[in-house]
Amino acid sequence: MAKQTHKLTDVKVKAEKRPGLHLDGGGLYLRITQTGTKSWIFRFKQLGRGRDLGLGAYPATSLADARARAIKARAQLAEGVDPIKTKRTAAQTTGAVTKHVVTFAEAAERFIASREGGWRNDKHRQQWRNTLDQYAGPVIGKKDVGVIDTDDILRILEPIWQVKAETASRLRGRIENVLDWAKVRGLRSGENPATWRGHLAHLLSARNKARTVRHHAALPWREMPRLMTELRGNSSVSAMALQFTILTAVRTSEAIEAEWTEIDLHEGIWTVPKERMKAVRAHRVPLTEPALAVLAMLPRIDGGPHVFPGARRGRPLSNMAMLELLRGMRPGLTVHGFRSTFRDWAAETTVFPRELAEAALAHILGSATERAYQRGDLFEKRRGLMAAWADYCGMASQAAGGGARPADRSL
Image (tube, rainbow, N blue to C red; front, top):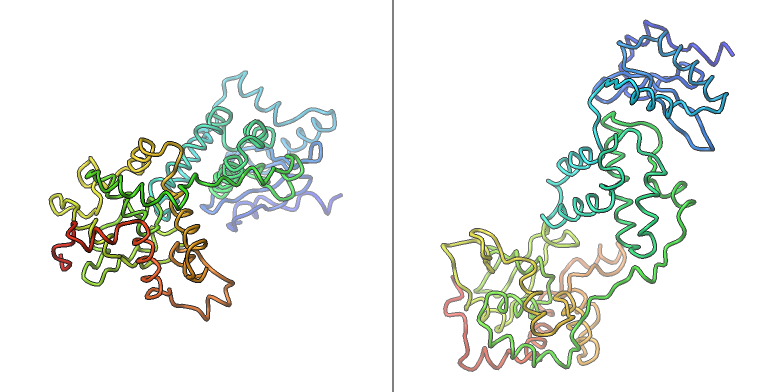
């Protein structure tokens, strides 16, 4: 037994600098964070689950004090008493405050702040905050991030695990990330209760994957010419943005955040930077005559950078603007669904190869090996595909026959 306990000495504890857990014995560890902060924890198992009890910060709590507290905790366990709950109750009763408690909500905000510089857009940051606030906030938002356990995670996930499967899955991953961050920052220790593999996978039933796939409502391709005719009769920025989005088969965010510096009007090329692309790769879009005609009709507001300016100065069109317009014209449809309309049209009515249509949608094709040999983006071939799409949409005749055309492509 002597070999298993009292591995540390006062001299070792004072001199030790390596981050991590350093065993004394009998479940007692000295924990050193990346910033050099030292504290004592008592590790034990209860009902098959590993748990950590904080015993105090060093040097305020000496090695001898930590050993005495570990002995007390082992005695409580032997009597069937939970030492962590006992400590919490004692703190609440005496009103003792040993340190500022970092809540889950605070930890989440600090984690998001540390990561948002690497995220592509504001929408992604807002999705993180919204899901954590809506689902985790009511359960653990005000709770010390260091004491959140599996029961807390289950209380959050179980009500939505089957009915909102995709949301629940993303929420679990986000909570896991926040708790991992908190552990690295020395705000908690032990296993992450939001971990899926080997943990929650045994507690939550398998999700009905068929329910997680939700297709965006799309317009049947045969109805596209009529819709485009209606859009041409609307001179709003939202209507022109929707026309442009359809003609280029891009995503909503890629279209509304477009800037004039990305567009070569003379060559008819729009290069979407990788930061705004889902695949994080720059995407060149061939601009047909009808697409260029739309650009020619757009206002230039005080030299603003955005192709589709919004109501607020210096900001692009709202990501809801096109959807609201569409709701008034074809209730139930989504803007993203027009990518499916384009894909269905290409597959059912043309002889263009599948990989060409997929490249137009900026989808990643083939294995890594195939992509290593096929490095081009099939741009010139895609020009023909997009010209055929514009022609089908009923726009080519307008651009060629006295309708609005770019007065000067060199602008």
